[in-house]
Image (cartoon, rainbow, N blue to C red; front, side):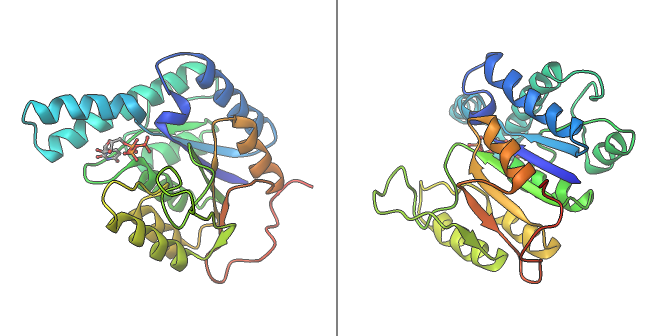
Length: 238
Ligand code: UTP
């Protein structure tokens, strides 16, 4: 089974430190030991936001800020690489072909950002599409996809299951509300739709939740099941 795990920067590196990174790396290695081919994508988190805020105050333009963000995602990706044992690449892949080559060579591939004007959510979806993944997991700091920002709105409701078209509609609605942040961005939702990628959005702060979702489809987040995709996945372990 091919799986892409996209780990938010605030999940993996809430602050620079080893603990979380070690625990997430251990789970990725367990999945490899189970026979999965694993692609990991790492976000920038609070550190990226701080750098971007400082550079914005210094007058950097949006593309320059994105480049700064990409650099931080790659730094975080290097931390994950440091925690993974042999069978990992030595540096984050710069593009999907490089990542695919690493996977074909039997390595875990690790990516950060690749191009301005998007986030690593889209990188995760594109990598999953490129390697023909059976499953894409977004390990975020929120428990799933909601109809409003759960940090702002006490009445926000979590979706247990969405089609890809419904996900696009929900995200588009959330992005219209300034300041409310969606757990997955719109470009990622569009890629999920066109590729028919089965996707799970969950709270990944405890990496064991990622392992359970991949192995058994068991999670408390949101399932995104594009139209035409089988109700019952055939790849989950019994
Ligand atoms: P993230 O993917 O972490 O963005 O990339 P985010 O969704 O804002 O952060 P989380 O999910 O809360 O952790 C950090 C920043 O890096 C740039 C963007 O500016 C993004 O906001 N970036 C990242 C790119 O421009 N291109 C990429 O491919 C990835």
